[in-house]
Image 1 (tube, rainbow, N blue to C red):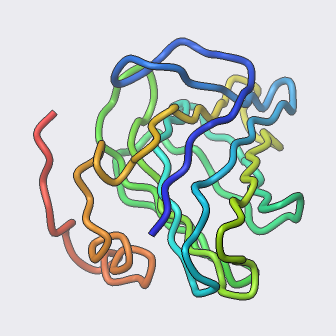
Image 2 (cartoon, rainbow, N blue to C red; image 1 turned 180 degrees about the vertical axis):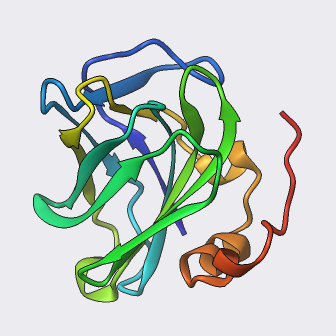
Length: 173
């Protein structure tokens, strides 16, 4: 399990906690990118990052090391959302409604794209939908600890078990 944090980008106003954050907007087709922690092995790996999206519906493209992997949407509801494309799986777990939909993402990356000790570059780009839509990533170096998610729960989430039942944990805000 590896976690991620932004390296640098245009700073935005923090949502759900202090600290730095960076935003990509649909209206500007802007992007935000950051590097993951280095994975320990060349194996299927789940990367976690804390982020928020606007309540306005928008499409966002996710790239790993410069290659497009999937498109996900911002949603105003507080449901669990998941997307799968090109061998990647992305799950969003909503935690709060604070000037948008705030929570964390779990990105499952195939073993073929993971090299031991080499961080991946993740990039999210606003690509369509409501021009007011945005995506914002937080600068938490250990999302699993910050969000109180175990490695086992993260793996379970990315393998689809959460799609058919309530989340197996509750975190006090």
